[in-house]
Length: 169
Image (cartoon, rainbow, N blue to C red):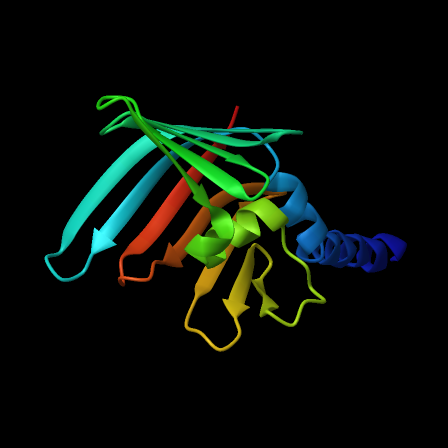
């Protein structure tokens, strides 16, 4: 008789722990890990899907993104600057991040803060956090499998849908 009560109770308790396990703290922690990635972009105007692959590395000095395919490019984000290096053409340029005014990049660099007035944070289900920029249509979704960040989805300023699949290194 006791087992009939405790087994369902333990099951419900474990489900509620999993449901509450994703948080902005977990998201910020996951955003600072090293990953390999596959990024797919859907251009709805011509129904074309492009993809690229690469690796993302985080350290105390900043973020390094190495795009391996289809064209080799390196991005280094350090402080308020992003250095872009086209390896094939051997061209470099440095841009002030604030000049870009890129919502996705700002979240990647600064992390997610539930108390900000710049955007709102929504827990869509047990595995997805959605960030919606105020006064804009920018929406970024972060999906988890268990406690690991697995997928980032967003639409850029020209209407291209992006999905970035992440694999921890």
